[in-house]
Length: 276
Image (cartoon, rainbow, N blue to C red):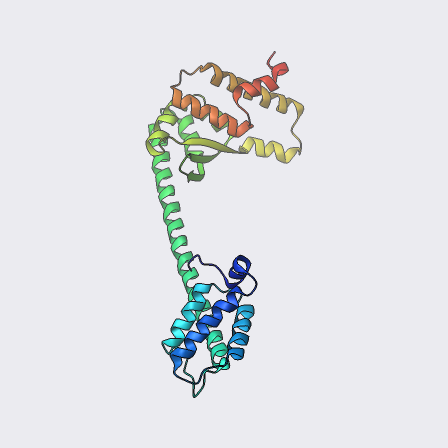
C-alpha cells in the first residue's frame, strides 16, 4: 500500500527498457540463488520483457516482494533448471494473494472510517441535543421555546480555519431567533460551539406550505413583503439596533451573507429603490 512507482513509471522516467533491464538483474540474482541450472541470457531477457509488459502497472516494491517470497519458498521450487513458466505461474498466484490482501486492507480501512464517522455523528447529535435542550429550557417564553424546539441540525463541519453549523428552520422562526432572541441564542451556542459560524436552510412553514399548494407561483405582494422584511433585517444588523456584542453581530452578518449571497450593505444597495 506504499507510495512507490510502477514499472511503467520507471520506463517513463529512465527510458523505454528501464523496467525490463531492472527485472533482468532480479532474474539473474534468482538464477544464482536457486542452485539449479540457470536460464540462458536470451530466456532471461525475454522473460524480463514479458514481465515488464504484463505487469507494467505493478509497483516495483511489489515485484521485489514477489522475488523475496519466491526465494523464501512460498511458490514452489525449480527442478533441475530455472523454469520461466514456474516463475510466471508463481507471479499470477502472488498477484491473486496481493489482491486479496489489498481488498482486506481496504475493507478494514472502510470499516474503521465508517465507525469513526458514526462516532462523530453520534457525538454531534448529543452535542446538539444538549445545546437545544438548554435553549428550550432557558428561553423565557413559549414562543421562543417553540422556535428553538423546531430547530434541526443539518450539519456541523470543522476545519483548521472554520467551524460551520448549519441549521434547518422556517422563515418565521429564523426571524424570531435572529431578532428577539439573538443574544440568548448566541450565548448558549458559544458554550457548545465556540467560534462557530451559523448558516440556515429555510424550510417552508405550515402556512407557507399551504399557500404553495394553492398556487405554484408566489404573488407579487408576497415577493415585495419578503424583500421589505429582508431590508428591515439588514438595517437592524447594520445599525446594531439590538446592541449586540462584536462576535454576535459578526455572526449575524455572516449568516445574512450565507442566506442572501451578499452582505447587508450590498443588499440595501441592490434594493435602494425599495428602501425609499
